[in-house]
Image (cartoon, rainbow, N blue to C red; front, side, top):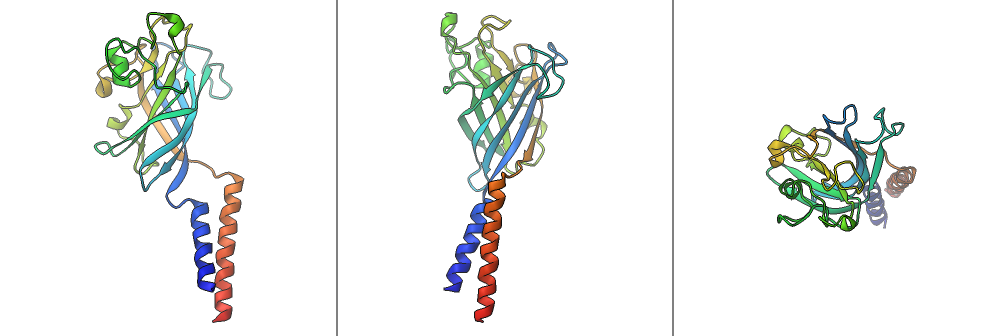
Length: 237
């Protein structure tokens, strides 16, 4: 009986601490030479399962560098878009990690498909010249936006240059200064062209998220049960 209790307590502790899954914070930056000192920045969170190499629950905020002044979030006056729909993710063995994209709208439709392509990917955006989905009817512009990040197999490992070059974003918010063209950020090495305002990725930083208070409580409860089971086992012995 004591062995069963010990096993249950250990499983509880492992579940509480997240044996394979963990939460992370991420900040990705695209240099915008035409809106300096403002850059396009994505600040978000995600969950990563090291066993399956999957990214889930990616969400966050994307700055519109053509607006306001960048004095440091959250005190800057830039407009920030809420990206809360992770709709795309895949593992790339050659680069050693997982891509994930989160969108403003609950659809991947971002760029026009008049020139082919899937309508959202950075490569499709380059091929379409950044023109929005629904073109030429402005009323059909969904105003979508997304941020594409890359998570190495060890999320805390700094990205190398090849991985950074694959980071991308798009912002097709209607009423912008660029008419039918979405604002994008891509690299020449990654996709054959820089963004529509010459923006390109320069960095991404991933840090371990601080557990919520309830997570600490679960971990302490699990460890407490483990200690209790061990003490009981010693007494019986």
